[in-house]
Image 1 (tube, rainbow, N blue to C red):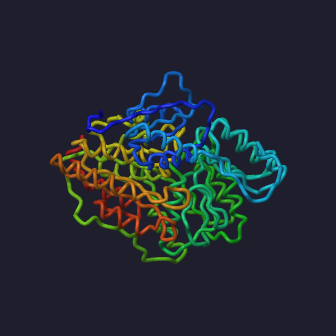
Image 2: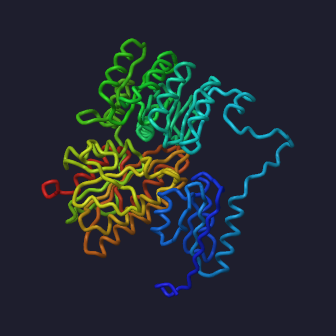
Length: 508
């Protein structure tokens, strides 16, 4: 008998050699969890992070289980419900069978074989990191540009791919490139934006999405967004793909203005790129985040000014009640987007001072968040990027599966040291189909839990999205606001609002 007085049966099994990608397993887990009588279900590859998550759910994974093994963990009311869940699992994992045509052509087992049969100008590689390099190199040597969606590719491998791309006069977008738009066609995570005269070169996926959403709100469209991968403007990678992308866009007559967006970049690489741009016949706005530099909303406004668009304001959806200023002194930022996290830290630090993070602005502020989510930043302000490689191994990106972030929100609500929480939500193709359906109840529950403990918890949300996105920007904003959050289209404005809700003079 369980502590709640309910019968409980647990089933944990390991299936060796049964690989499935993380997005598929996320969908399978949800389908199995929906079976009547199932209390909890997790179907996942046994990566270290997933094993820790399973342990946090109370499941015991057998010793010797390897990352290449599939773990099926079920908790149900009785044996019958377990059997129903396993039957649902079989159905969910069954491969789709095409009924169209009767070709006996063997499926291509490598990118090179596929391209020899049917050449393509662009190839998308989305396989586990250790396997991504070979597939990307196949595409490059075949003369195709390649978007490497995969993360966990090493820096030397990235440099080798980009040097090879330069030799073959193609472009490598990535690794860990989540966003690209090519002539209006979105690849990876992409918002629905109108066509227009602005192209982006982006060493930042969510930063590019945020800028595109702001421009779209102002009525200005986008022609191309060439993702580079978040490390391209580091000293080690040297802006290799940025140079090729800028040169290519300078030759694109339909591009009137280029915006280069990046997380904090290496100063020497930026100098080299500015020298390159000086010799190109194209105007460039620089959205390179850093202390003392413009935030993304300021760059969007400057871009609009250059195009003659003025008087634009950024919408805010308010919660029914004013956000409280609680006795809690610490600000917590829980992000799906790394660049949005970077920008929020830069903005909030101007008011609050140092902010700890797993993607810190300086090494002494590093926060180790590996493990089962029990990290403790103490009384310090802290912001975490749940999309960082260390938290996505074997798991879907938090823009698809934000469950780890949402669980952390509950932990922050229970911490009397925390006065305000800042969250991001990113809409568009590839992202969660309805983020508010999970986050709105999580926000309401967090505020209720704090209230039951005699505290108030302020919640602020940065919402990146357009009115054309399939999730419906305004509907998402209104549901999150109804749950008790103030929702901002500008990430910088959201960060300033959240920072203002804690008392800097009292912060530790």
